[in-house]
Length: 448
Image (tube, rainbow, N blue to C red; front, top):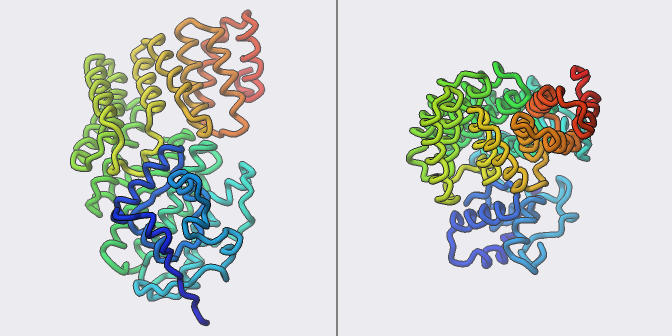
């Protein structure tokens, strides 16, 4: 079958100007952060656009590019109209010397990730409008003689998809189905030699990040033992691949899990190990988040001095600002998350008024498009206000969380609301509190 050849996008190349592909990719990531988008642009992606392999960007990249070049349409950036590139026949087939298996095999591998993972469950659970797809069971995967770009991209895209859906909807509806793409990723590691060392490194990194993402879904939905196993799997992958960025991420999540499980000394040690792994990564924001994880551990141990010292370090590092070295997965870590994590530290120490102040700032600063985090911060605020002796305000915050539960499925948020309801129950005589408790009981029959 004849293959159509990609037509280089010379317009986009001119727009890049004198910047290198890596520098331009960094500018794209900065623009994405400005509008709250999640893209993982790198020099490879820019190269594919300029080579004409990407005839029309996905919707996230479209929004970023139009933000970068106001007043221009996609056609002005050298892209084809979206309707002209839909379907397999419209996509150019580019010969790749690093693939010894057929394009049909690569398509099967891509579909295994794209249709048997989170996209399908999202359509069923959240009505996101994803087109029906036929799931490919793990046993049906071919054993490629060499793993190449298509397989690595499939793993990386699944990581991004999980993070995006979790940001919007919470973990409960995603966890079980996300386990299959994770098994597929590690099957690829065992399937055969990769085409190059860089491909091997990317596959290890992608599989490790996918293990962390699936671990987070388990973590957020209260499956702590399963989360611990996934985080340990990611840490082992990082050690095998000598990947300090993945290692720092695994330790960061392990510290968070240890804190939630009440293993506060382990939380401190894991956060400190993460800081050691991240010390040469040139990301002050990553070090700031790890300092917050450590502060939380010290708070759990009742060490106010250690907690306050780690909080000061976190703020100093955060003030250094974002950088191009910040990992992609840290897109959630802005000022709202900083405020929420500090609120948790104060709450653990019993400083309820201070905790409520930080939680309130988190709710005000949070972009409302990220529904899960907004619900999480408001749930924290409700609990802190209830314990601080402000029942009316706590009930109002709890009502706002209940307003979001049609869109968010998170066992963590449900547990926090249950705590708020339990603390407020003695104040049921107050009309606002009574209304919240009655409504909460409908969503959680155990509260009756």
